[in-house]
Length: 119
Image (cartoon, rainbow, N blue to C red; front, top):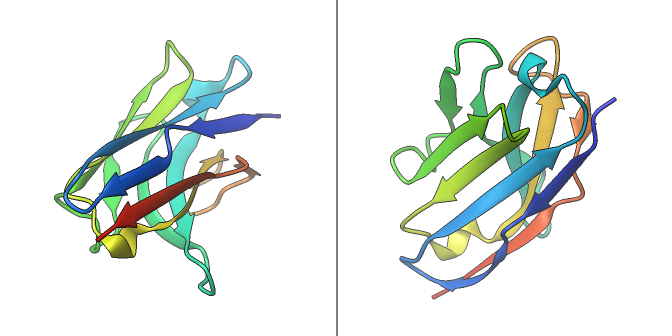
């Protein structure tokens, strides 16, 4: 089992940057595909970015491509989401997920961290 704890959220002005972190428990972090998702008020949770467990291939939603970067540090059991050029529409609760089977299926979730971008 994996426990995930997100941090790094906060209030930032449009055009600013934030870096989210997701710390994972356990000794098998490198075995998991990791992803970031977000959920805005009144909307469904949506995919933001993912990084594969083996090759480190990265995937992004079109809405964040070129602005957000996902990375992982297997030695630190942590996945990061660097968010630049933030827009008010990026405001949401951001969740990280861990999945063992594929890049589109996640078995474990963190509690989320709030990101608010003011205009």
